[in-house]
Length: 122
Length: 153
Image (cartoon, rainbow over all chains, first blue to last red; front, side, top):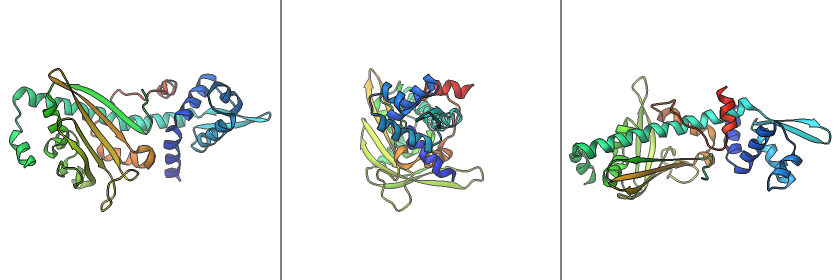
C-alpha cells in the first residue's frame, strides 16, 4: 500500500547517517556495507541495518556482488522524497513572505487593524 | 546547521517592531491574512481552537489548533492537525514555533515546524494540501544537492 511506502520514505531520510550514506552512494555511484563503513564513522553492521531501511523505503536497490550486496540509489524515489519535502517548505516561504508584508504595512501606515487587535486581546 | 528532514526551519528579517510582528503571527484576525481562511482560537496557551481552509466548492476543511506558548513579543507556538477531541501533543500534531528577536528597529523572525518525522510522510503531505496557497517557490533541501540536481534533469 502506498501509504506505507510514504511513511517509510519519510523516516528513512529523517536520519542523518542514512543521508550521509545516500550522499556517498550518489558520489560513488554504488557501494557495499563494507565500502560505506570505511567512509563513515559507523560499523559495517550498523551500515547494513541502515541499508535495509533505505532498501525498504525504495531509496536504494541492492544486487548480489560476490559475497556482498552492492547498492545504488533509486534516483526517481529520491527525487520524489525531495520534491515532497520541498512542497512543505515552500508553503512556509510564502506564508513568511506574507507575514513580512503585513507587518511592514502596519508599521508604515500606523496599525490599521488596531481596533481589531484590541478587541481580540480583551 | 543541523536541519533535519523532519523539521522545517526558516528565518526572515522584517522591518517592523517585534510587537507588530507578534500580533501578525498570533492574532487570529491577522493569521487569516497570511494562512487559513478561518481562525477560531484565543491566543492563550492551552486553549483549543481550530483553523479552516475553504475548499473550491465552498466547504471549509477544519484543522484543530492549540496555542502551546505565548510570550509577547518574543515567542508564539502552537500545535495543529491533531484529531478533534484529542489533546495536542508530540506525535499527534505539528508544532510550529515563532521566535522574535529585535534587530535595530526591526525583527528577525524564526519559524520552525516539527513533527513530520514522528507522524510520517503521508500526513505531512495531506496537511500541506490543505495549507498551501502558493507553490513553486525557490527552495532547496540542504545536504542532498546531488539529488536535487538529478531531480531537475
